[in-house]
Image (spheres, rainbow, N blue to C red):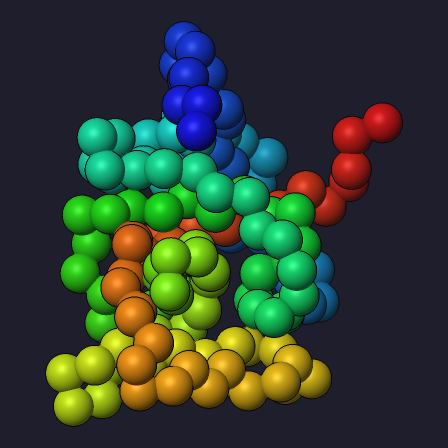
Length: 139
């Protein structure tokens, strides 16, 4: 696995108002601050890795091709999206804990239920803290 190398900081302007996703509301045209995206999504650089999602079992939460910011230092809690290793294969699933054993599920209601056997080895590799999705693919 090649590490992702972050270059120099690239602060981007942060507008002082939230943008309405429904009926538009008037907002002042001013910049509140500048933030670096990597500092926003990475809280523990030594434990953070990027994965690229493949497939549709986590649709609509995660789409095929999304970049997943996975933090290995976070302890998963019920409802988290995690990267888990199931019988040696990495996969992305919704996490729950039942009788001390991780329970994993898909978010896509059209996908076949995830039903591992009792002998299936499951370990949580890390918690997906962010997913990054391009809304306008690069040309």
